[in-house]
Length: 162
Image (tube, rainbow, N blue to C red):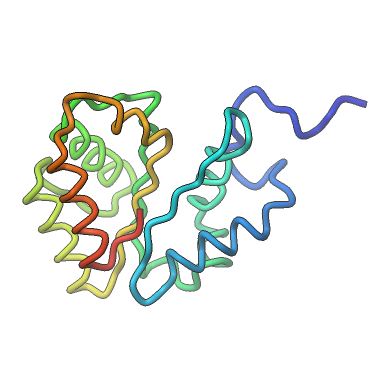
């Protein structure tokens, strides 16, 4: 019998996703906190990081682990596939994912991102940004230190989980 846990591509949903209850509960508890926290999922290649994000992006799983999904706006960026080379390109990817999911819009800029966060907070919703392969951003010279300071400040001062 072939090993059912060896996949060439990340899992896209619930099928084949097993035995990650501890990780799911840990990530969900931080996202669902009164003040969402940033979470880093670290591991070697093909250890299931992308599959975990895909699983949590599923509305049924959001309802199970986070309660009422309508209280959240999820953005999922696959940065290895579409590598942004500067902050504006990063915010453009956020904009594209928001439009794709019908969850909102923003001007792809620092101020546009800030305005989105404030608008969602006024509506009583939290922004959750899943960044798969975030190292693609941290290693690129087109991202100044100010970008990371801005993102950390937004996450620490608002209802944003990353």
